[in-house]
Length: 262
Length: 269
Image (cartoon, rainbow over all chains, first blue to last red; front, side, top):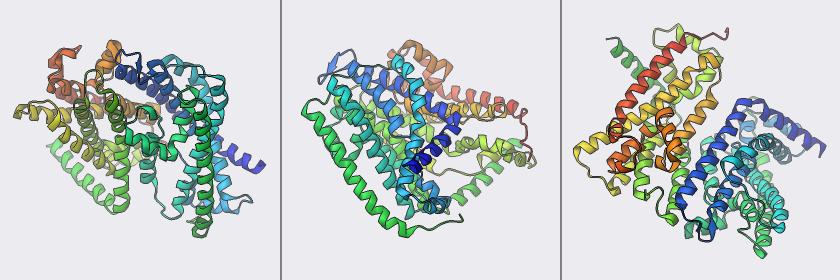
């Protein structure tokens, strides 16, 4: 555990080193919130409610999901492809802790560098977009759980994707395509309740909704009662399934490790 | 004569960069797909929501797709020759710019041709396909004049985006790191440019026309072509004049770049 913490701390520092890109992510997040707020107001076009969802709930959803997305889905989904390409993976494998664990801990540390940005951005985000208190006590309790679940599902997806680079070295184009498919089906832009029927059905069967839609919808009370338990259970099921898959893929990938010039 | 020689050298260097890039065909294909998804997610968002809401600011899916296609084609057209400006930070910081100064070709030409990003072809192809499909279903009377204006508008849009990126890149000689500014500019073009400007209200609309000239890329030309001048807060001739604005801005940006290059300090390699 202590060793994993060290991995996380290391990557946290690496992320903080790039201060300007850090600053620009802050500005772009606020621009995104502004854009989504304006665009949703234009879509509503003076109506207070569409399909039982009020405009204020919708702008709060846009604000919350954009803030969440910065934390849960940073632009780097895994450090693995870079470490394989640069041959650093050889050093990682020599360390006395498991490789997937190291990578997960490192990535979590890297992603947590967004927390200070989010804290500073929060008042601005609420000013530009919209904030709402949790819909109920149950929502307030369920939200942190769902957020941790979202983080884990996304980390496992990133780990799986990163391990692909043991088979093919250059994955940046594929990663980019993946990133935008994942973003769309996560509900970070359009909540599932406004997706056209077949798209919604696809989104419900994919793991991505657990990374953005689930926590935001729980927080705003759009999923209530038994639905809450069901949503958390679906997240849990994805964590178990993806975790098992990652363990299996790793058992195959470790035999393919080829160190380049390290 | 000098301009002609400059063009010839540019084409020669760009051709070499193209051939270099074509050596990695598999990777090229995947990068084009990646670029298409990057531009596609915005369209997917608008399509999904319009499916439920029908219109935004009075514009339906055919009109929005036309606006989107115009914006994306202009973006691709600029990106193909201009992509390397993304690397201006490292070129200046790591002293690669020193090498440009001792060769008998304009440093800007050398910067633009240091590599090509063929994934820009994906943006351009995606834009052209979308624009063609949308042009057929959008309510535009396609006279030869209208088609000609559309082509000029695409070119003008590319120049407007290019002018802003070039001007921002020129700041590198004083600031050393400008990529965050350029990412923000790119984001405003790519994300804000897909919507009819009037939804942003009059203050932001004024700002996005006269301070940050986003309106000239696609919104103003699309509005006059779609015959929706009534919704404009500015006179319609400004819409018809959008391509000229692109030329003027690019000229100003080029002059700005030339002036700023005097502030280059070598990193001492």
